Image (cartoon, rainbow, N blue to C red; front, side, top):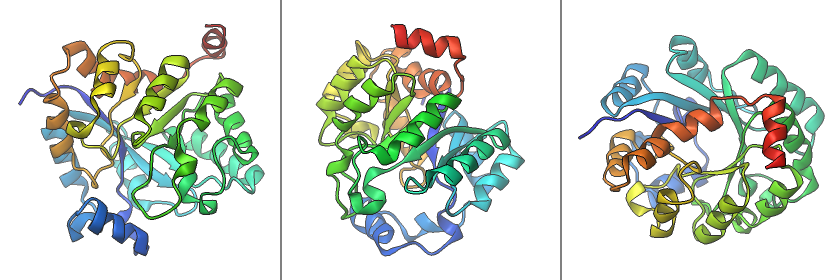
Length: 286
């Protein structure tokens, strides 16, 4: 197997810290058909070994503001050269204090993006066009901090319509300064997501929680043509292990430049390179 440079933009090391809710067990058992070990405590050496074997130079670890992950913090402290953080858990109904905390964490920790899943809070009642998201959009745009939003029908048996990517049409239009990324694919609305990626400079898509061999042909065609800078790799480890999804990505028969962009360059540009105010203004003009 050819080893290429990889950034895994979504990994979970917090599952073993607390008892998982019933819907998470259902996702493991019924949706991904994963082993019981999926939610066990993670060993740092084991994770680094899997990263090294698959060319993963850096991994972004999920960190919840509502339920902070000691494991994620320990891993970042032990190997700041290998790990960064993605924040979730912003309280959209009480945004002032929550966004102050977000601001402080971004200043104190190696945070490369924040995230929110419309289906996973408020009983799926709030689509991304709802005003409850606007303070978060503004804060992320102000900080130059990318925001990742779940799109596509979720695995758990919870309302999924709010994760239709069409809602992001108005978000991208109203907040052109916001660096926005769809995560966990966009099934069954892949074509809508692709059309939005073509339309908006500030929008990306991450294939986390999707086996590369299951990605639709329309997305792979887009990656080879107009979307060379638009699609980003992520595993959702350990839900999908790196030793599975990296080889699958290498087997997609993508041109070398497209594959390098997908596995590394697009993430480096979008998540690890903070634009200046002038750059953000330039994007808006384009």
